[in-house]
Image (cartoon, rainbow, N blue to C red):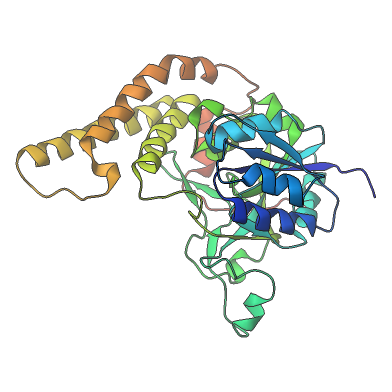
Length: 343
């Protein structure tokens, strides 16, 4: 067998059955790959199950839960190949995923290729299930790349839309999804790797920002199909999600975005928090979602302030050939751009 040119890193925690299904799909890829599984201190027998079923897999058993960002950082340290692939533990890749993802990376200025993530709510939509649904029945898109909003935040391109002709062509997108992507290892390391201290959420958009600032391109590959059980390994309604999502997207802007964009986002956060507090004092109804909880938002504010100085130091580090203003102006509100000829 040819020597692998890509390492697939799967980060997992307390999801033994999901990660075994994920690894089964990695084993069916049409190109060889080294596989690293980073376990974040699971207590459900994940480590033992992976070791028994896939003895060739390099297993990194962390003593505690460091989240996706910390797990990816630990996994990246084990990568010795030209490319590193990210695959969620609650995802199942079609056999051609890696091959389709590696093809655009032959262009020397492409640093990341993001997959077509399709929603798989019941864990059975991959393989032949799409055909079984009937001709003309489209799957639902989870992510076809990351869009940069005018606020500087990221969003899933195509989320909730049918997988139709709009997502059938390769295009350049602002960023990649950490759910399924293949990255140029050298480029990732050159811009500082993953923000391990963020634990989870927005680490992919943060890295996309830094790759863009360093002059790299990011491409969506429609043939790189991955089925994703969205939020199967995390709860989007939880306080944990709300805290890290709100905190990390502000830190992401502080690290990467134009100063005016960062200042505007911070001002909005403060004003929204003050408005919610005023409503509670006045006895008015406030939405029950965790993101509207004033106590949680104050925790976010305190943590952002505590991390602001080191984040601003990081802002000055790493290669940068494009200005923050230029990247924001080119991509804010733009879902996609044509892939240049030959790329």
